[in-house]
Length: 325
Image (cartoon, rainbow, N blue to C red; front, side):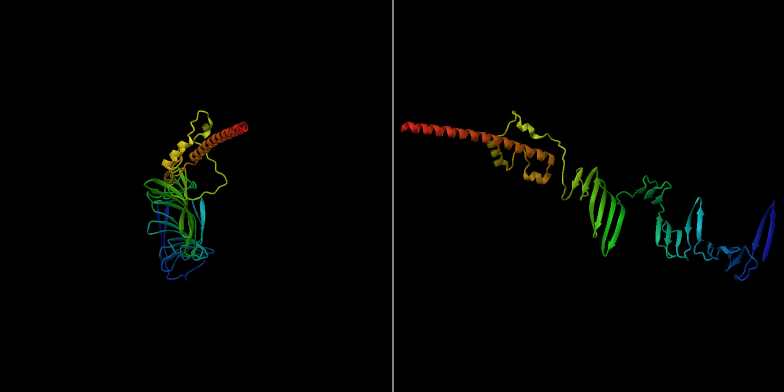
């Protein structure tokens, strides 16, 4: 046993070296002593408060530290604190690094191992801002949740996922890059199959399709109680103007014989290839109905005139018959 005291310029340095093979030596209420092949225990009156074991592990609130620093109880860093319970008790938590360059925040209610983990990637791909913004794949998130991935790699935010037997069910928000541009999608996985419910591409919205080519593209059937269409073409009331050149029935007949469809109306092949514009088609059909109405009115007039002529002819015939007698 050696004790030494050295004084240099009014500074007192205590050099103390005590060593025992086991923990049997205690008198009074010691403040610290060597134990267990060179470990150190620090005491207060109620018992050991901190230990440095022979492997260099430091324990505060525990005499059997399992890591370089283990705190059994509350710890305060800066102006905030978190509660960490020793892994030997009912609950546990730890902060540790990994060989892949990750910082891992782990907890386990069983008191050992890592069950619930949060990874902070080495290049900052998972990052929490002090302002309450969370970034995944970015150092500087600009929203409460900002997800970023490398080019040509889909970014997926999985809102709900569960498995029943071998079938998977989930609802995902995806951002997909391709040669055409960026496509945002809401994808529903049902019974293991992905269904794109909604997609956004170049300002267009798609339902049931990932490549909407119009402001709203629906790949499927639409059921509704009412549909209103803003007209981009004038209504065909001009058909009833006196200056309108109404095609004759003979002209229409000749056109149909050659083209197999009404004038101005797209052919079946054109409609199959290009679809139809509801606004234009409805106005065109209304125009044809109005033209047909004018023809029917003309036919009715002719019929009335013919009936009058027949009546007059019958009267003349009866008159002539009476003269012959």
